[in-house]
Image 1 (cartoon, rainbow, N blue to C red):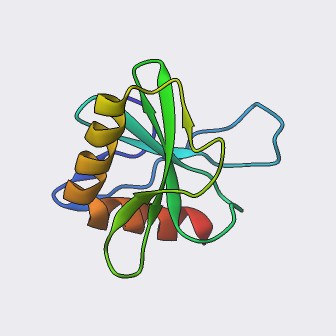
Image 2 (tube, rainbow, N blue to C red):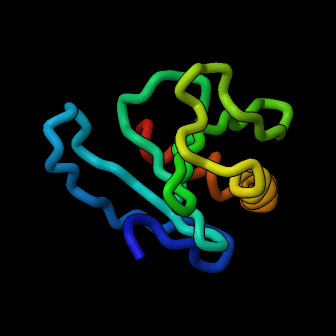
Length: 108
């Protein structure tokens, strides 16, 4: 497993190095139900996560009113089946607190 791991309802803080040269110095991920949710430092608001499922990719927003939605961008869904998008959204709702905490940790 890569990145952050949930531990007793909290998120630990082991960081991954990002050798891609994209300007990010820490990339943090957590895996729930076979989906890897990644958050990048210095990323733009609103709070969001990049979810990798199967061969696909979905960007989700974590809203202030505790909803999870696919972001309004053309590239928000790449190679993901409708069932995989539903899985991402369902898991993100179930783990909303962990994902928002991950966003907060990575952005500080």
